[in-house]
Structure formats: C-alpha cells, structure tokens
Amino acid sequence: MVEDVNKIIQKNRLAKELKRHGIADDSAQAFSQANEIIGGEKIGLTEKNTEKLQNNDRNIIADINSLQRFRESAHARMNELSEQISGIKSQLKEVLDLMSKLEKSNSPKQKISEEPKKSAPIDRNNVSPDDVQIDKIFYYGQK
Image (tube, rainbow, N blue to C red):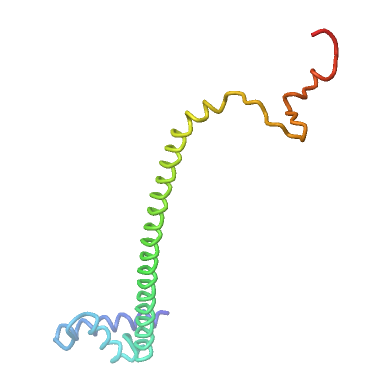
C-alpha cells in the first residue's frame, strides 16, 4: 500500500513536469503520460471499453427511439379516444334533450288518462272485473 502511494506521488510529480515543459496540454493528458512512463496501468479508454461505450450508446439511442414511437402512438390513441368521448357526450346530450321534450309532451296526456276507466269485458258474457267485485257477490254484514 505504501508502494501504491509512492507511485501516485511520482506520477503526480512527473505529470506536473510534463505539463510545465509543454509536453502535455492538460492535467489529464499529463497524468496519462506519466502513468505510461512509470509503467502503471494505462488510464483512458481502451478499444474494448470504447466498443462497450459505443454499444451502450447504440442501445440507448434505440431505446429512446422506441420510447418516442410509443409516446407518439399513445398520444394518437389518446386523441382518438378524446374524440370518441366528445362524440358520446354530444349523443348523450341529444338523448337527454329528446327525453325532456317527450316528458313535456306526454305530461298533459297523462293527466287525461289518469281518469278512472271502466275495465273492458273479459269473458264471453260481457262481464268486466268491475261488475264482479267480492263485496257485491258475498254478504258479510251490514253495509
């Protein structure tokens, strides 16, 4: 562990020297060059890492495109459903208007039809249910 700390200190000193002499343009490049000179691990992107990043980027782009297509289709479907709902609302309003008109037009007829009517004869002797009431047929005391 002490060796690792010493290597890092050496790399930092070498990076400062490389930057001071103009060999490296920035700190990251200077540290990378110092790491290569001292013989440590190579810092930066390797071909394998670059390929992985490019594949990840492609996958992310494909996912974004897929989500955009889904969003557009969902938006179109919502617009379609919204139009259907507004059509149903207008039809319902028309039905309610017709019902209220019918109720207004039927209300006088109902008052006239509420008058008691004598029921029509139901058998071959022309006897109606009003003629055959129990209290007319059976005697059950004073009337």
